[in-house]
Image (cartoon, rainbow, N blue to C red; front, top):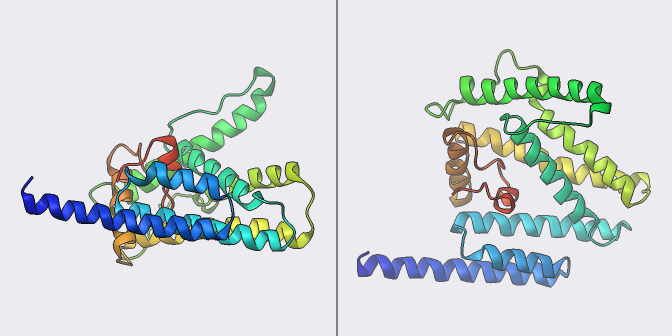
Length: 250
C-alpha cells in the first residue's frame, strides 16, 4: 500500500476509535448494563467498519434509553434489555427460517404441532425467499421506485417475521413476572416500535430513499444478503445479532 494510503487508513482507524470511545463513554454514563455493553463494544471495535460501529452504538443507546424509561415505570433492571435480546434473536432465526436454512423438528409426540409449523414455515419460505428474494428483488434488481410485494404473497406472511417474536416476548414477560397494563403496553410498544423501524428501513433500502454513511452501509449489507446465497446479514437496520451469530459481512 502506498505511504499516503497507509496514513489515510491510520487516520480513519483513529477517528473510528475516537467515535467508539465517545459512544462507550455515553452509554457507560447512563449506568445501564455498563459491563456487558462495554465488553461488546471493545470486542467488536477492531472488526467492524465505521458505519457498522456507529449503527451499533446508536442501537445500544436506543435500548439503554428504553431501559431507563422502563425502570421509571417500575420494571426490573435489565428487563427491557433482556426482552430486546429475546425478540431480536427470535427475529433473526425466523428470518433464517424464511430462507429454508433449518427445519422445525419436535418430539414424535407432537407430530401434529410439527406438521402445522412445517406447513407454515414452508409457506413463509415461499413468500420470503422465492417471492421476495427470487422474483421481486433478485440480485440484479435490488432497487425499485416503490416497495414491491409479491402478488401471491398473503398479507399475513409478509408480517410473519414480526408476529412470531411477539409470542416469545409474551412468554418471557410472563416468566419474569406479572406486570400492570401500563408496563405490559410499554414492553410490547417498545419492541414493536423497534420492529416497525426495521420494516421501515427495509423498505427504504429497496427504494434507495435515504443517503448517509449508515444507510449507505446498510444498503450494501442488504445487497449482500440478496446476492450471496442469502446466508449473511439477516438483520436489516440492526446487524448486531448477525455479529453475535457469525453471519455479518460488511
